[in-house]
Length: 219
Ligand SMILES: Nc1ncnc2c1ncn2[C@@H]1O[C@H](COP(=O)(O)OP(=O)(O)OP(=O)(O)O)[C@@H](O)[C@H]1O
Ligand SMILES: [Mg+2]
Image (cartoon, rainbow, N blue to C red; front, side, top):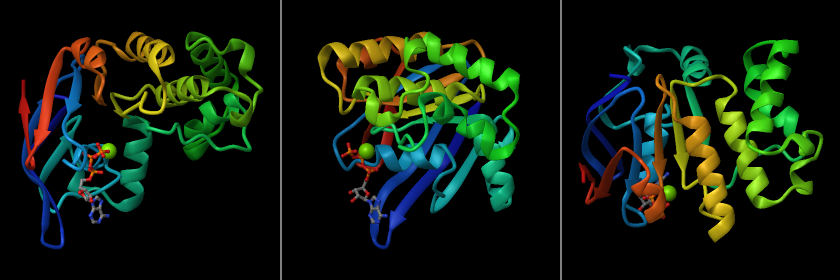
């Protein structure tokens, strides 16, 4: 299994958001998570991505028990193993498309010719070859989202987590972004987990979960 959670809970003071989530996700799985607003989907995704810690329960990714890592070990693990696509892209406005895609490489190492080539090829694969040097303010919402997808793949993560990647986009653009995401993200040694309200996206994933009343069930 790539990812295993056992009885994960998350509470804020007396408010129990997650009440015992036990999930197994394998490499090559593509998973949709749906559920009402406020049900804890983003909270769960942040915990799975090691950006937040559970109140109790355990999380293992790629054979690694996350609770045993130090803060710096955890950020290295996250950078190497987990890719994120957030709802609003989270690009740094002062950097170009190419520089944004290379940020995870720069965070822990040196940007060499091979990394640059890899970034350029990812950017081309999401249809932005002509936009490499544009700043986020000079591209469209769908293009920003596609840049975020390229960035999430630059470290070749085993686990790709997306929080409503098309939440701010409408119809046609949302569909294009989803196609790009699925075609570049689905791989034999990568698991994809996407929070979505989109029926068509959920239907195109291999597994589907619903989060409700603090519990997650496969449908
Ligand atoms: N830092 C926090 N402190 C207190 N409560 C929080 C905190 N973060 C989230 N919550 C609460 O946890 C609940 C779940 O939030 P979460 O963002 O995970 O929901 P969601 O399912 O992603 O909703 P949406 O579909 O609207 O994005 C919410 O009721 C929220 O108010
Ligand atoms: Mg959310």
